[in-house]
Image (cartoon, rainbow, N blue to C red; front, side, top):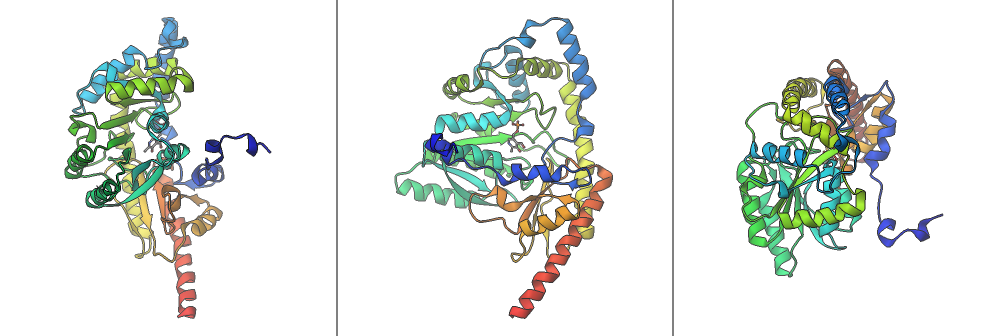
Length: 409
Ligand SMILES: Cc1ncc(COP(=O)(O)O)c(C=O)c1O
């Protein structure tokens, strides 16, 4: 009814199949590997309650008032220290506080993407990142990945091809640590190379990093941003997965000129980020509560990751393969190409188990035989049962498809 009123830009916006589908997975009897939500058993409710009431009793005006668009000074200073521990040396003016990193993805797309601009991404990639770029009509070019993350040789070839046609992509969107959806991590060698390529071809990098602190084994990789000397890398951080998502606090680290433009873009979006949440996060950060929570989460999710991988090895058919993430929330499962994860999902839901289909993480017709399992949400004692249910559905589909193939053959 209102279609004719919508702007051309709004008319081309598309819903994501994953967001629509979450409603189905919320039935209590479903063991859901679908949502990338922090586990509710691990939310720091007591700490948040104590600090919030203390700050309110102290009648901090800053808690309930508007605050500067760029973010409260106390939180920006905490972010400077947080980033220094990651080997990233910045000043307060390099930081913009956002309503979650999702707003960072939107604002960066808003200030850089004109309709038809080329944006390079890993394939598969985070559905919310792809959505933000597409909402501004960016033309996404997908680059394949292997166990070491984005294939930099293919990326360079693409950059060369585009340069030969006089085209420079605006940015390369990357989730370097425990990628959503694959769980893969980009190797140090490739991170360095990515910055070299960005400098050589004059393209920016958007490094989206909500998960790097959730490492369960191995050693931390340096952020891509830590190799950046010329300001080519824009870094997005978030407290959603490492502390709480409900207050919607994330941040952008970038060259001051970029931050200034982002502030202008943010002013017309929400004027400022949640003041209450900023003060709460800054206080929890300064008092060491966030660091403690991260340690707790590492222990908590490590066990879930291990249980998931163990159960996959025990129950899944040999025709399936999956990634073994060193951190984060996700493993990516691939099935033989004649299997379709959307068809499997319908049957899996009947069997009270859920995941997200692979095609949601691509902009072209890929990922139909793949899916993402998130191990963050199901209780640890439900994980094996969930994987077992799923394996039964997959095995049944395999038999069915193989019989059809025999008939055709
Ligand atoms: C890779 C990635 N980027 C950004 C986000 C958005 O997070 P936030 O809650 O900070 O907006 C998510 C959430 O799942 C994510 O996985």
